Image 1 (cartoon, rainbow, N blue to C red):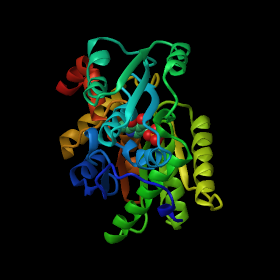
Image 2 (image 1 turned 90 degrees about the vertical axis):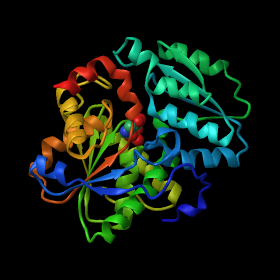
Image 3 (image 1 turned 60 degrees about the vertical axis):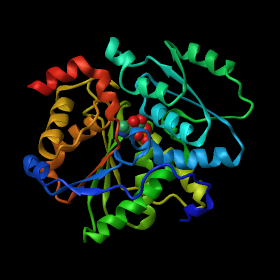
Length: 324
Ligand SMILES: Cc1ncc(COP(=O)(O)O)c(C=O)c1O
């Protein structure tokens, strides 16, 4: 697979660290756990979207675009990282955010990622319904604009996590770890899809566990396969067999809605390794890992996809949970 054929703009700091988590492993009572720190990749408070944006914005720049339009929930990490990347590249950024999480209050609406979006100079449009979002989208000047999908998840964005798979397998090989189970959050899908496609194309014998944070399992299976198929087409290769299993048992009542097991996972990672997760994505993926670790026999790699600013959006509940 040749990723060098795609225009790519450098945004993050690579490779991200792959760290041992011995106190976490001991607390979970399963095999050794390692954490792939895609939360500390530099730009704009970091996170998984930078890998996708390197390809998405690489193409936009090559096409001479000067404006980026994208979408998300009020506390979108994708929007915040897109805004930071646009600031770095001198592009105009239009964020159309929809209040689709049943969470309100000053912290959720005025803290966390939303604050950072403004710091990065994005034009932030807050909407209540998809119709309103569509109307705002139509009103924005599209002349030299590129529209990025929710979460940066399309075939091109998926290539960012194909690159991550190559990086991660190289790091595991250096440590003499030939096989592992990779736990990762699945939202819009390109992160898990890229890891699944990249590892399969490398012929790596390990497995991906995609922990859904929003959709039921049957939807996430389709989403992942569609994205991997699109990315394989871009790479001009046949879609290999993907070694992925899926879980949707830690979503709780819905996307962005906190659960007890999520707060427990946040405290566990923080108190054993000093690693901070977020309540919407990495926290629910970590809860899936915590439930299953005892039954895993291979080493576990937790791909930390970032999202920490979102924690501040949950301020009143977070302090109550953190204190106990
Ligand atoms: C912190 C964080 N982790 C994980 C994800 C999920 O990644 P994907 O949308 O590629 O499935 C997101 C997506 O928004 C995210 O912000």
